[in-house]
Amino acid sequence: MASDRNIDVKAFIDERPISSYQWLLVALCFLVVTADGIDVAIMGFVAPAIIQEWAISRPAFGLVMSAAPIGLVIGALVAGPSADRFGRKLVLIASVFLFGIFTILTAYTTTPTEMALLRLLSGVGLGAAMPNTTTLLSEYAPTRKRSLLITVMFTGFNLGSALVGFAAAALIPTHGWRSVLLLGGALPLVLVPVLLWLLPESARLLTVQGKPKERIAALLNRVCGAGFTGGENFVSTEPPLATRTPIGALFSQGFAKVTLALWVTYFMGLLVIYLLTGWLPTLMKDAGMPIATAANVTAMFQIGGTIGAIIVGWIMDRARPARVIGAAYLLGGVCVLAVGEAGAVSPMLALLVFSAGFFMSGAQTGLNAFAPSCYPTVARATGVSWMLGMGRFGSILGSAFGGALLGMGWGFGGILSMLAVPATLAAIAIVTTQMGNLAERRQRLEAAH
Image 1 (cartoon, helix red, strand yellow):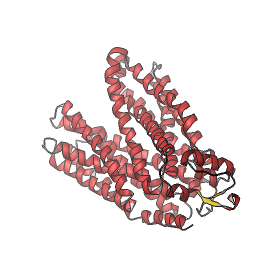
Image 2 (cartoon, helix red, strand yellow):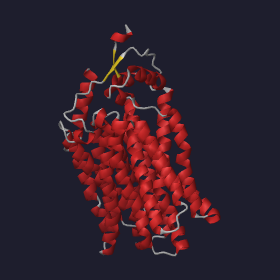
Image 3 (spheres, one colour):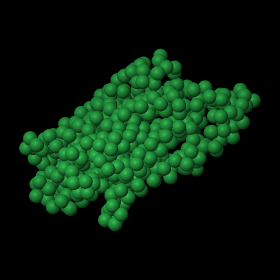
Image 4 (cartoon, one colour):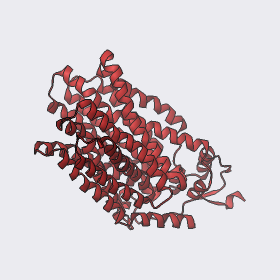
């Protein structure tokens, strides 16, 4: 009888073909990440026009530029525990609404202080959105395709960052910088009713929370095309935790080593990526390269990163993910070192920058895809979001560190060669912790049940 059936939700999702609704979920998460990418990058494109109109110095505008990254940290740290308690769908939709509405309000500011406050609030929403898209998609993606689907989703961030650049180029000359912010805020707000209508809650989370089985059955019928009657018993084979708090779970029952390794790896990766992409055009210009050429060469890093993310994700589904990510970081460090050794006038510079982006961004996106598998369902959003939050300090440090090194007289070769060190540390952190072995043991345990 149906009432006697025990259904392991994870195993059920893993053993079935990917349904059309699961592909729709990939598309919805992709759109959220694209909107996230637009709003994260937007200030870089409107800053010159704002500085000119308000007649303020670049250092004075630095307060505005640093506000959103701080908000990203706050949003990431708050969003995970909230999503593990109140659900992925509610927190994700709230985060999209927040960064949409505050980006629109930013368009009506008249002082740097007002703008900095609203960018801080926008950053909270932006920081909350990314980890929840990752967590929700990971809980509906079958294990055999999980890494690839999540890395494909993350390519939306690069797409959004590129689209807002084209939009700014078209809108600012005729409509001014405020129109770009209005567009950047309107897009996520348009997404909100679509997400309310179509975005599912995590069936795995509802299962471990002991929610009514009729609700879980209806959800799996809708998303996976199942034929459950509501009389089944939906179960999770994950072992119970010694603590009920999601944050406490990050440091209990052997998870502490995994947590610290994720933090170190993500921190080091973002330090390299933000310092490289933020200061490479300036370094090349100082070395004598025309600024237009410098911009085009730097763009090769993003192009390489987009392709690398998909390929790294594809390989992760077929090999031990931690080793794949570690190898990508190590090769990224080698490529960054080669960029520094070759110099800004090398004919191979564009190819080397492309290769650095391929491996560094590929590894960083792969880490986003791998992290959800390292934590139990009750703490998964917290684990992913706290990794992103702690990693954001690497992006802040990378941006500031690059300026400090330039101020100390460091040149192109010295700064680029130095970046091979944190890239190597990222590779060591993820490989030597046996993180992959722990995740694989968890997967085997779940599969055995």
